[in-house]
Length: 288
Image (cartoon, rainbow, N blue to C red; front, side, top):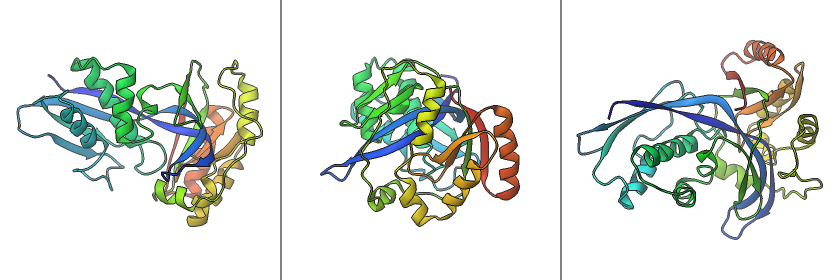
């Protein structure tokens, strides 16, 4: 098999509400997730060696454990279930998505590779089986199996796929520090009581959706800002830019997003942000 390259896209949470803490320490959340045209590039090929060769490169390779990550976990699971048998691979991941940012890069890597193995290696796994394998790697991995707008219902990790495109202009800023998901949930004391919930069955009206999202929030923003006050400053600065509808963290942070009225305003805001925060990574993208 010749080397094949696949794209592994990042996700963002347009809002995130924690509605229940479970007895097992996890939480039920309501969230609207979309995917952006920012992606890691995964190069994969078969090799004759007796073990896999996994490597990470790119701007955001730092901090990834080469021996224990979502890629190695996926390979271990597929071999345990005898799907890959004795085949070994050289897999190189160019990390364009910041690690530990709430953008779901690691989850997307595993999901993209799982889809690749299923289609190219003839695993013949149906959607239900794919989701079960993905869930063993991480809670966000099943969501990343399809690059569709997704609504987390808050009921036993159930989610719904939406057959629509948002076409949002997105600015993403990563402040070069990692927010531990476990720590953010542990520190959080807020349980939301939703007054108005997103209706995934209604026809999506762009103006109504934006107005709804303006009134929403990410519950993990409070604990993230308490630990890292810089997050509040960043969000307020993004909000102050011309054409910004709203700004908040994605996932458990630390990446902050801004949704803009058009690409021109987003790019202009990016220039100002790079002047104010020259050491931070900032990118303009569009939802897919």
